[in-house]
Amino acid sequence: MTDAAPDLSPGYDPDQRVTSLEQLEGLYGAPVPRSLTKEIDHVNADYRRFIEASPFVVLSSVGPEGTDCSPRGDPPGFVRVADPKTLMLPDRMGNNRTDTLRNIVRDPRVSLLFLVPGAGETIRVNGRASIVVDPVLCASFIMQGKPARSVLVVTVDRVYFQCQKALHRSKLWAPESRVARGALPTAGQILQNLDTGGFDGAAYDAEYPERMKQTMY
Image (cartoon, rainbow, N blue to C red):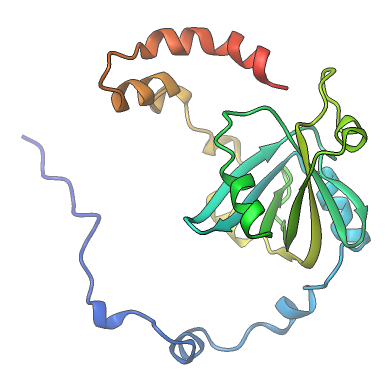
């Protein structure tokens, strides 16, 4: 008989929550000065190099129903630095949930977190987005013969880099951090476990590689 698993979700005293800026500042103290000087209101040459090297960005938005966070990826340079105050991000074929786009229509505020494989620093951009469907602009982002469905044009408000600590702690790019895919449920298994109508997860997984080829762009 094995020992019971330890309780990894202990309760907490609700009176110990931080509920004011004064408490927060007392707990963490003043910002490190360089953490403020690295924040600017435009994309400079150094930040541009990171953005143009990034094949992956996390896009955060907010709307009446709450917040949303969406992964976006394409070959490096897929996010275009049109000028120091403007980024352009193509929107590709997806599942048509349009969570991010629904939010932007009603509240333009967005944040972007750029990751570059192998680099410890990440680039954070805060700004305001609009959804543009100009056919010439969409065609300029063509991939595999297909234009972008729309383009998010982001007006940059603030840009700054995040230091290496988070990626160093997580060992995100270390080969030994890779998780064997078989250790996690597949998309088909997840859907089958959520569905009560006899969904065939194995068939979904078997068909997925071809379906991905057909719907990538």
